[in-house]
Image 1 (cartoon, rainbow, N blue to C red):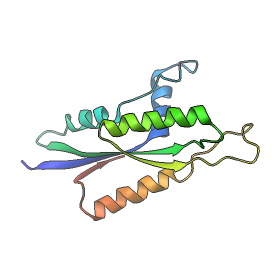
Image 2 (cartoon, helix red, strand yellow):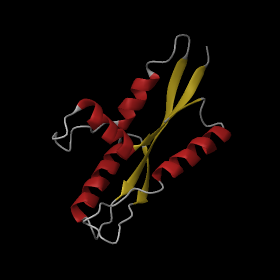
Image 3 (cartoon, one colour):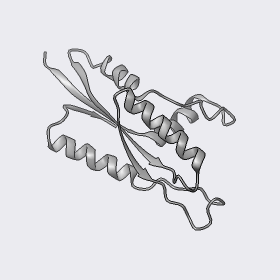
Image 4 (cartoon, rainbow, N blue to C red):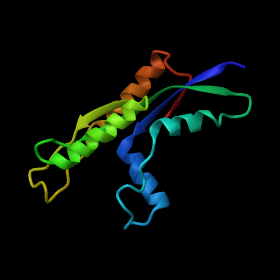
Length: 135
């Protein structure tokens, strides 16, 4: 049996919002829905199909980064969270949030995160960096 190399690709906001919708009421604390990417990757590797064996090669987290001058506290919290993920062994790919002209009335938007994730997923496959890719 050959051990398969697994790379986990995470859209940070998508996973967070999905966890909140699936497991918490709308009024839940903003901390409900937080996750540990490396632990998630290890959990996925620990449950391969019968006859398979998998090793976690990398966890890649794609996230939108708030602007430090517009959202100082949110930016600082975001940096702390990214540092925690990196210290645990994950790779963080951050793209700046886009702010509409009427911000803060309209929310800042995450743009290009899903495209960066998709490009890396295909590039990693083409370069043979994983046997199993999980998005």
